[in-house]
Amino acid sequence: MKKWVALVAALSAVFAHADNYPSKTVSIVVPFAAGGPTDRVARDLAEAMRKPLGDVSIVVDNVAGAGSSIGANKVAKAAPDGYVLLLNHIAMASMPNLLRKMPFNVESDFEYLGMINDVPMTVISKPSLPAKNYKEFVAWLNANKGKINLGNAGIGSASHLCGLMFQNALQIDMTAIPYKGTAPAMTDLIGGQIDLMCDQTTNTTSQIEAKKVLAFGVTTSKRLTTPALKDLPTLQESGLKGFDVSIWHGLYAPKGTPADVVTKINNALKIALKDPEFIKKQEALGAVVVTDKRTEPAEHKKFVASEISKWSPVIAAAKEYID
Ligand code: ASP
Image (cartoon, rainbow, N blue to C red):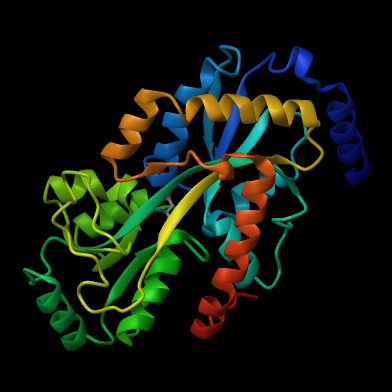
């Protein structure tokens, strides 16, 4: 059976060429729940890439679970014909460090199509947490040691990594509550079922603005310029020296996707990244659309390799390997 799957995949790669690509719907697998920050980026990008890719329809397919490894694995094993793509984030760099048994290889099982954006994160809490500022927030955390629940989107997700760094910086252990994405985690945070979360601004900006959650810090070294977030202090300002986390999103195809199809998708991606409407939507959510050389497949691959090395000591220090 396995042989047949491999044969069909190889044949579709032979027949997939840019001349007639794309001739049917392209699907972008988002390895997290619908309605969350990664999903949000994917839906905006699908809209912006539709015309440049030849007015083809692009659908988003949420294949959530296990910190993105289920969806990423689906794309790694898909036919390499350019019709099933993966949009993932920093988990591409954290998974190889965290999971001892990876079902796929981040570096050799994908064609890299280019980077999309950099996205800051925010530390937020349930609305009923009795703190008006960062100092009171940390006092509450210290007073509630052993009872704090921290939501995340599974092992290796951006919220998991940020949560690990935050706990390490404060030296306070918290209980991780994994979800299939931070959209469902956000629902529970607003409802007070969990206490905290660190999540991308593409998910948190509107909830902070609507005062549905409390915000205590932004994870980047500089304050953000987004109107809704500009008054939020950085964690560095509040005393967490060197705390600087910004996550990114990239686009990937199964290994073996023909080079001319890769080039066609990369060209459409670069046009989308210059689309004023896409840029405006991303900026309103605190994200910065990438314009540098990391939009090129080879440069994005180099960047991800450097991120894998960057996160290795952080994860080793947290002793968070998963068998
Ligand atoms: N924000 C999630 C994460 O922590 C992913 C998501 O739900 O899009 O990685």
